[in-house]
Amino acid sequence: MNRRKSGAGRRRLAHLLVDRFGPAVWHAVIERMGSTPEAEEAFVEIMLAVWKRVGPRADVSRLRDQVRNALAALGISLAQEPESAAVAAEAESSETEEGALEETGLPDEVLPDLPRGLRNLALQRLRAQIAYEEAEVRRTGSTMPRVAAAALSVVGFALVGYGAWGERSSPPGQPTNAHHASAAPIVGEGLPVAVQAVFDITGQPFDLAHLAFASGEIVTGSLSLGPQGDGIELSAYAFHGLGLMGHPRWTADVTLVPPNAQGGSSWLLRSWSLASTGGWAVVTVNWTESGLRSVASETDVYAVPMAGGHASLLTKISLMDGGEIVTAAGSGAFAWQTAPDAGGAAAASPVHLAPIVTQAGAAALGPSETVQVDGLLINPHLTAAGLVCQGTTLHPAPSGAWVCIAPTGQETVYEGIAGAADGSVVEGDHGVIYAVTSESAPSGQTLEMRALHAAGSDEPAFRLDAPVSAWSADGSYIAYVQNSGGRMYLVVARAD
Image 1: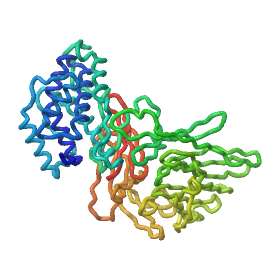
Image 2 (image 1 turned 120 degrees about the vertical axis):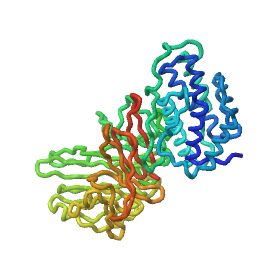
Image 3 (image 1 turned 60 degrees about the vertical axis):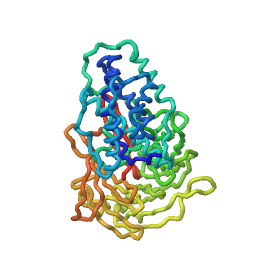
Image 4 (image 1 turned 90 degrees about the horizontal axis):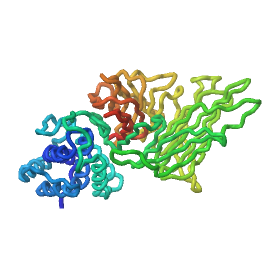
């Protein structure tokens, strides 16, 4: 039995598959379809279908036969097949040198007869599929990711729809190195992350500011304002390879109940947020009261199980004389702090920190602890190491720096991304905390990550090798939107 290859080894095998067999497959496709955009899409889908059948159990000594059998299931026969000895030798070399296969981009080598753009497009699709397979192994513990049994049949029907196996759908001679609708984004290149899923969100209204993540799924939030009452709807979608979001795995509704108005005043929904903490999706709703005499604030906090279920009210935080409320969720807990208008930041309360527990089948806050700080927290995040923020309103951190506040109240200042005045933090699988921010790029903006570190230490900064149009972070996850081939993709990645 073949041992399972590492991620680098599987990416190397994908390169081998495209470079050795891609030219012959492309030749077979254009014989039937001509050099058309539809032919390019068909080629990419064929290579993806072959990978799904061959990749999980590839045997380097039988790679040619395995690829040939997979193609035969699609009705494709190769006029010229590569020498199996050469293929096996290169594949075996890739296995023995896995330690040196940390790839930062697509190799420059391109074999004849396969356009560079098309080759890279196929490799990007295969890389996205590999990322999904690796995520499934981590999520399920299985060494055999689930593969759609009808994948090859779907591709066959797609080719028939294109007129692939009889009539040419458009004249030959059209350019073959342009990106079309099937183009995939460059996923995760340059960042210390593992891509979990890539969703095609072209034409879909998508609120990147309200996302939460759990193992194996993404939770989206949307505000619904209706005559029968207002609410927030949560929808959970399973991670998968490149594709559409499809039908949600579960949905849940959080009914919004304004506080009781007094003296002819009314309550307005000021803002709301969504975050993940442990096995819960936490919804925080901020209200403002507009009255004749004063402006007051209240925050309602709800928790919904990440496995699906009913929303539970965790707590109500009120400032009857007005003021500001700061909250944070993470590492299975919830934190909050208040500052009344009368005293301002100097009168800010201690930070209250409480775990989220289950009581009588519903979510509730456990016993809370307090952490003394001087001022109101700026941009707080709750991690396993403690509260991470950009200082307080009385003592803001220097630009690019972050402050970690332990439960004992001890504060440690760390360097993040030099010059970054805002941004977020994410927690890696091994406890490393990364600062994340957007940076200028030639074609817009991109993402930069850097592990928090002591001043003077040499910690590298990482940049995404592609522009993004929007991004957000939650817990250990980063989500960003890329435009590629005229389509929009949501890439979900987990910090290493």
